[in-house]
Structures are given as C-alpha cells and as structure tokens.
Image 1: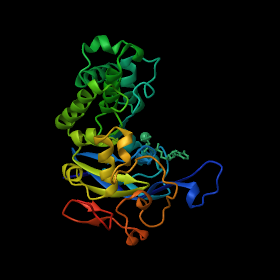
Image 2: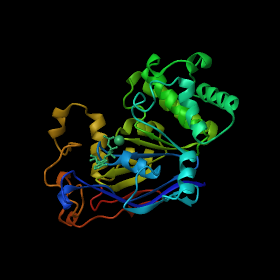
Image 3: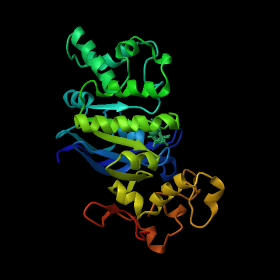
Image 4: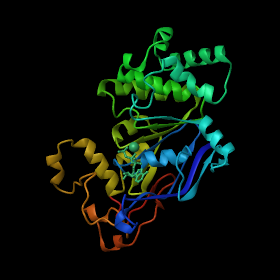
Length: 321
Ligand SMILES: Nc1ncnc2c1ncn2[C@@H]1O[C@H](COP(=O)(O)OP(=O)(O)OP(=O)(O)O)[C@@H](O)[C@H]1O
Ligand SMILES: [Mg+2]
C-alpha cells in the first residue's frame, strides 16, 4: 500500500508564557513522534485534551514550524519552500472541531465550498460552481441548489460540519485531517458524519488522519491508532487490537474514561484520572509514571516504543493485559 504521509521524529516544544523554558515550564507537544498513513486508511491520533494533537496537525499543514523532524507528503518532504507547501495545501485538507468557527458566516454555502478552488485556481467560474455543487451532493446536503444559496447560520450543526467536509473534499485531496470532527455535535448526528467519512473513503480512496480524545468514535472509524501522551506515542497498532487488549496503562485509562463517565468511580482500584495533573510530572523516565498504578523502579528510565508483534508497538516496561 502506498504511503501518503510520513511523520518522522517530530519535535515541538512550547515554552509557557512568561517563562524561560526549564523542564517544568515547557510543554512538549511532540517529542520524537513518528507515524505514517497509508492509502485509503484512517489513522487515529488519540490523546487527552491539550496533548498537542491540533498542533501536530498544524505542523503537517505547514501552518506552524517544527523544532525538528520531517513531514513527507506523497514522497516529498514538506519544508517552508513554496512548492512543497503548495503541494500539501492542495493535497491535504482539514476539517475542524467547530464547524461554525471554521466557516465564514457572511459567505453563502456555495462560496464557502468554492473558495479553495479559487485559491488553487481550479476551473473557470462555471466549472467551479459545478464542482462545488457536486461536493455538496457528495456530503448529502439536499436539495443541493437550495442549500448552496443559504448562509451557515441557517443550517444545523451537523449540516455545517457536512459543509466543512464538502469544502475539504472539493479539491480532491489524498488526505483529510479531521480534528475532533464530531465532538461538538449532538450525539444523535455524530454517527451520520462518521458514516459519511467512511463512505467518502470507500468511494474516493481518501486517507484520513482522525484526531480525537474519544476512543469510542475512534474505534468506529479507524484502522490503526497511535496513543499520544505528553509528546510521546506510548502505544500504536491496529485499532481493534489496541482497544480490545491495551498494553499501556495510559491507553487503559483512556478506555476507562469512556466506560465510566461517573467521576466518583475513578478513585477506585487502579483507575487514573485523565487530564488532571498529579503535580509531580516530569519528562524524566516514563512520563506516565506519576499517575501509573503499575509503575516499578525501572520506569525511572524512559521506555522506548518497542515492537511486540508485527503491527504493534508499546513503550512500557510493565505492559498490562
Ligand atoms: N502558540 C502556542 N504557544 C504556546 N503554547 C501553545 C501554543 N499553541 C498550543 N500551545 C499549548 O500546547 C498544548 C497543546 O495544544 P493543542 O491545541 O495542540 O492540544 P490538543 O491535543 O489539540 O487539545 P484539545 O483536545 O483540547 O483540542 C497546550 O498545552 C497548549 O496550551
Ligand atoms: Mg485540538
């Protein structure tokens, strides 16, 4: 299978505002992150809020520069050079978390969907209208002509996210980065959007980088997954295997957080609170050690991602399950 995107040893650190950059004052969004996405594959990048998922997406799209590491899209390394940026901006599109914030409220739906055709100089006016209307029908916004003349506020949240998807696919991209595309939508319309993503993939062979903190939607849509924790991928592999038998305690913690929404239950046994600082976190040794109920002496050293079967890798000395 052809490799569409390859991210290698990506590093990006942010220094917290007003600080100088000691260990505690630095947020390591990516600290040697590597993964690749194949043709017509949905690759999930999962991690808690603030773990750096959107930042990694922005780096891939050339909107932000990494400290180190490479991004290769369709065999060409993305640098700040205009030609490689142009290639990724045409071939890789993004669907954002908030469909309302990501589309211009003063433009009609047709103009919103047409915009990237104009930016990339694709077709004449008539052809652009035709391509944009076709994209709207692909995302099942019917009747198309009627929807096309409306403004974003006249649509529901789910319909607006369909517009965002139409806008993303209108240039015929190889890769779409979907950054929490259903997290702000009503539960009742989420499944329709996920089904649409699956259908577009089957029809057009689009690859997706699906970014989320929600492993239940990830499991529904993904083929492979990488679990990101404080800048490191701690576990990766085929999604069914990772979610059914997680080997890293952090993956288990993310799974527990969807299984037990009642926060009072999280104290019991070996449950870990996601997104809550333990106050003693460092980047020394295993980054999860301060929260990990399975930690042993050896975890003071940093575990590297290790291959444990053909397709799975885990960075943990203990390995649960
Ligand atoms: N330009 C910036 N300067 C400094 N810190 C930043 C900057 N952009 C992001 N950060 C910090 O980097 C971390 C990662 O942010 P990011 O938005 O990538 O996380 P995320 O995983 O997408 O979170 P969420 O799930 O909430 O969307 C956060 O701690 C954020 O405050
Ligand atoms: Mg984000």
